Length: 254
Length: 322
Image 1 (tube, rainbow over the protein chains, first blue to last red):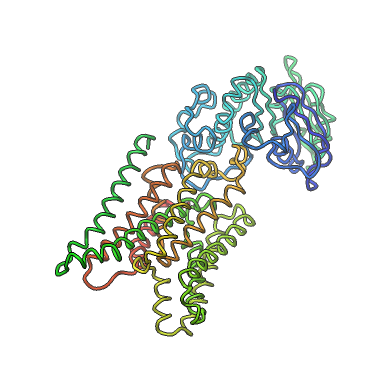
Image 2: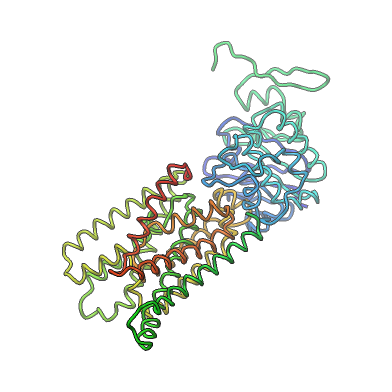
């Protein structure tokens, strides 16, 4: 088992400042913060892809930065915020060539949940931003598919919903919730507070390279924490016991 | 293209290569007015080195081109365009012109070493620039243009001070020729090229990861910086050896992998061996064509540039390069 995920005194190049956090339970952890808060850097460090100047990262008993990448990649996948590809690969070629399982069949469940059947033979240059994002998420999940099926995967997603339409966002988040319920650890950043509120089990709030709060979504997502994180006022609407956060329109702007 | 179809196509390309190789050797028998003894002499001392040179140089340039395009994330990368071959040619030219007379007997050793040094040096410059200017797709090409321009300028100065024999030798480096290599040079350079090409082909799965850049490759479990360095050094060795035996040959490393990808898809496990075989076939055909001409042997670069220039323009007009 890869839990708990433990970050101790992580500092890096003025982007992360002495961050310590332990993610104990499997589930969806959502990382929220303003632009430049250090979300992407923190996800890279946590995923074992960017060595911090100071501090340690452990997944269970595994010391991430002394373990070979090839070993980590069996359990951990990562979706970056920006992708660019200079060649005219099709969706199928992206899925096959960019992961270690270059001859693995693409599971039907993956094709259905991310709705990529029509994208498999489409060249990348003709895909929209959201379609390309769904292909890159599929690529990452295909990489750790056996680990996902045994409930032992760490799925790190940097703004996975960027460019994805609302229907596909909802289907994806519901599926990720189901994957989290069987033991997989999903850590993602996003800018939609209501998505975090609806689907995340725990929330991390980051600001200026520091961690403001971490805990169960219901406890951490409140108006004062949101004000501290985003310097922006929200109001909370209650509908059928479900909270909805709406930014307050500022009379004078900022 | 499906995996079995790709395997069949690579196999068929191998057979075409063998046929071209045999045809080039057999062309000795088309020559009239020669005795069997002379034909045998021509076969062993001229045609066999020519056929081996064409095969290994074509393979070296095309495999290196295909690998460089992925490592530098630029479909326009080619050992000639990005300046690796120019660096090797410049060092060869410097050795040719500046070497004192008493050292001429060491040319067999010093020339390849100079080519490697030139190729490695320009590869290092290109690699540093591509790392520093990450994300700027045109940076590698611009760096290559800068290196090639500088090389041309230095060659121009060398022409100015060279004697008649040195000028002829320099022309060989600039235009490329398959007829200069002798058995001794081939004895070490052909295995070196074969080894470098096999090393690059063995990294084809790694090159597949690198299509989407370093981060995806790292998350898939490989160390892209380390792997890129190994592949680049193998490319520099292959291109350095190719320039040492055949001079600078333009366009082959750009166009062959490009058209192989258009026809056979992007799987480097297919693209790299297919490019090697197609490169060998292309240069064998050039040699065969050159042999059939009654006048003189053609400078290879002249033929490859005459074919490659229009094909590159066509590819650009069709929007095949982003």
